[in-house]
Structure formats: structure tokens, C-alpha cells
Length: 350
View 1 (cartoon, rainbow, N blue to C red):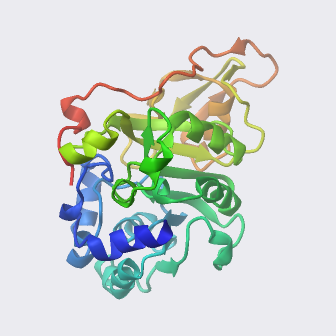
View 2 (view 1 turned 60 degrees about the horizontal axis):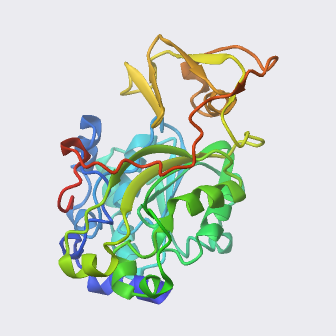
């Protein structure tokens, strides 16, 4: 499977226009502050980037970031601008053609962003075998990935390696494709369906349980949208399964509880995170307005109190009294099925 994916992304595809579905695409809408950064990315890097959107969580200045499946380096270079000269970005990819492009433009981007020295490095390797690279345990603040983990034949190994490499309080923030049911093996084995980020997708509930097994006790869904295949031949083969593009954040925090427990706690967002003066979005169910007391479960309290977000919140309450479980910890499909104009679900987003 590795060789098939390398051939598909290294030789078959020459630009994002060669993709036959929109499954490998994240949402094309970008915040205004990111657009000037992307405008500085080298044209060759942009051309050989197979997707859209940008996986960039908030509060990145000074962070050390690892990008799994970094491809031509587009996200790495954009993140290098966001972390600043005091931060550093490492990209890992297995495809020689992609790495050649990424490495060719390291000095170019350092000059574009006004840095004395580059703050980006690329490694050739497999995202399931990060232990074979010169990467130390507990050495990254954030790990990102943009629609790549579905291409891995061993997703459990990817998540375990990510957990090992993250610092305590660090997070894995990534977009990927998920399915509404388990994909049959005969479709998983199809090189085209796999390369198009469809048949390698995890059934969403298998992903949630796998994340917990690998040490990420409370996966948080940030955003999602249904995918349209927009290719009759491919849809005839796999259209009986629903697919969703979803962004999750997984925090490396020991002893998070398996459900949302109520301790009578709350937080107040100070409005001090750059580009987020009016609100902060932790996940799909936590849209926290500036200055407003916002009740939270114990896990959410810790996700804000034991991470890089701590200084941007006031914290109310203690652990003295347990009031039971927060409602809403269900087991039904967590994604939205309805396509809306804002979801950009119709047609290809590339």
C-alpha cells in the first residue's frame, strides 16, 4: 500500500487538478490573516499540494510543530510563518518527488518571511514509523496532518507515535476523511479509491475508540462537512457509504475522564488569543464568547488549564463536588449530513 500511495502522489498526480474526487480537500475558506502568508508560498510548492484549506490551530507563536504527510511543504511553510523565528516546523513524508520540491525551497521561504535562518526541516519517513527518525519523545507542542492519515495502512501506529512525540499538554490537530460505516476490504484494496482518500477512511466510531486506546482519552470534533464524490464511476462503487471531512483535536493530558463529568466549573475567555478577540472555538460544542461565564466539564477545564491556552482564560470552581454527567455524550453519528452553502460541499473544493 505504501508503494501504491507513493506512486499515486509522486507520479500519477502532477497537480491538485488531477484528483478525481474532492475527498482529499479540506474546506477552501480561509481566515483573512492567512491569505497574505499563502501568497508568499512558492508556486511550485502550491502546484504540487493536493488539497486546500490549511490545518492551523490558534496560538502558534514559538511552537514546535510536526506535520505528518507534509507533501510539497505548503502547510509547513505557512506554519513556519505563524510560529515565527522562535518556533520550528518539521515535516515528514515518504514520497521522494514531494520531498524534492519541499527541500528545494527552504531558503526561499526563510527569505520571504524575513528570517535569519530557516525554521523548517523535512524528513523522509513513514508516519507509522516515526521512531525510526531522529525525533525525541515529548518534543512537539503540536502535531498536524492534512488529509493524510487515511492513507496509512496502520493508523494505530500513527496515533501511538504522535502521542509519544507530543509534550504533556500538547495536541494533535488534524483533518481527515471518515466513513459512516466500515469500508469493505475489496474497496480498501483498490488503489484509486485508496489514493483518492476514500477507501482508507476509518469508520468514525472506530477512530474515536482507537484514539482513546492510543492515549487520547477525549477526542474533540472541531468541524466537519459531508463529502460529495462528484465522479459517477467512483460513486457507483463506493457511493453506498457516506464520507465526511472532519477536523479533530486530541490533547495529551493524562487521566482525562471517559465522559463529560460536571464539577460545577466554568471558564471566562479573555479575548486575548490573536485573531480571536470575540470568541474562541475549542471544538464543535464549545464556542466560548469573550467575557461570558461558560460552564464546562472537568475534561474541558483541563484542556484549557493544562495547555498553551491557560493564560487566556479565567478559571472558576474546583474539584470538590461532583454533580454527575454532562448531557450530550452520545454515540450517534457526530457529523452533519446536511450540505449548506457555507459548508462548501458541492463540487470539488480544489
